[in-house]
Image (cartoon, rainbow, N blue to C red; front, top):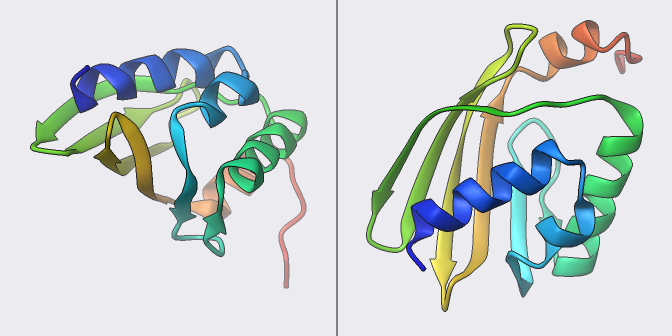
Length: 118
């Protein structure tokens, strides 16, 4: 399967709040680095991160574009409340080995009425 197809399936699982399915897209030693946060390393830690996030906020990913270049896919997204971001996914053997996401954390926290750290 092509990286862009896998990212579309990742988005489908994300929009269902399905941390188990999302985790299965990652290699055992994958790194998920949402640059507003510390990197999360390992499939089980990534699953826990998504489980915690889905319990904290209702999130929806609307695909604006998915681009592919070799073993990389780039997701440009927005959500219904006006937030925007992008994610870079590196693949090996049809599994995500690195994901890096860029989005405005302060806007996210404010939009979801979550505490803003000092």
